[in-house]
Length: 305
Image (cartoon, rainbow, N blue to C red; front, side):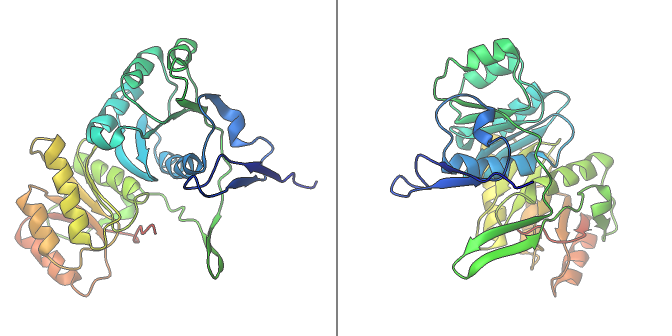
């Protein structure tokens, strides 16, 4: 049976001076899942793609707030209300005007929490009737009941030289994804936080560093041209919104020098996950032994360009 190809015109592209359209092969376009708000834009669609891919990493109640394709707050909790509050508290300044992604239905109590702040869009598997009624009072707020998406095994992006294709990174990030390479073993809680942080790091623009405590991002550094600056940005954010606490650190690429580890140690971090592959791996391991840091190497790097 021949696929139906739809060409859907959008308001404009990345900026108002650019024309844009969506080519869809799906029987039901993404626009048909919209329950409220203004027309979904080009930038909304790019953010939707990023947010749904990140959300797919998590099974327990999880909230992700996306801003310009990057998560600015991610949290898992015993219920979705607490997960949302924790994700918002991760970085309330950046969350303003962001897109909320939830993997549980929105209740009236959760809708009241969301209603208090300006968001661009709320994406969830469903909305209770009263929750929908309240959120629809914000005429421009886009509400989307997200579809069950087919898992693609390849992905591509357009370049000046043609379309680049690659297989998707579908390796599960769990406790088997990390391996202890220093002497001190981390606690079970810290290991769970490391796994959580790596799931987030996978969906941040490189260079990416995630600081996490109790399955909540407490500092994110991403899109920097060197890893030290990404780490400094994450620590700066953590110090802005959180009192000093124990946290773990996950990096999408290796720390090439011990300067980053000195900075992490100075700020109280005792558990780190990173890929191997640096000529200074032995120095990093030696530093971890000396300062009783739990250092874990991950199966492979998690770059996102």
